[in-house]
Image 1: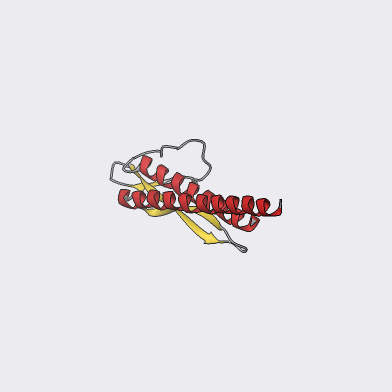
Image 2: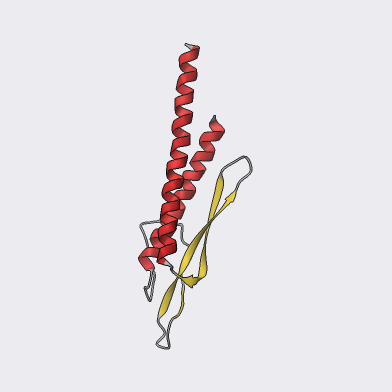
Length: 124
């Protein structure tokens, strides 16, 4: 049962990273100049912009969280910067996905906890 908790914990961490990336993207959508940091997160790589106009303004390029499976279960999340500006509709979808992932992984942890309690009750 420990494997299930480890996998669910990895899922919670991945959802948290996805949430942070969406928050950074939303905070910086349409911004020019230096990006606005969110908290003390080390999630974002160095943030740069691309020239938006002849006056030398910079447009924030969206960050992207990519999940990959790990051996034995769970996921690893890597954050990279895309070459496109922030799409707010995509960021809202990302927030909804993160919320659903939190709920699903929290339910796994809750179910494992209930199962362990029942096993202890049977043994006593």
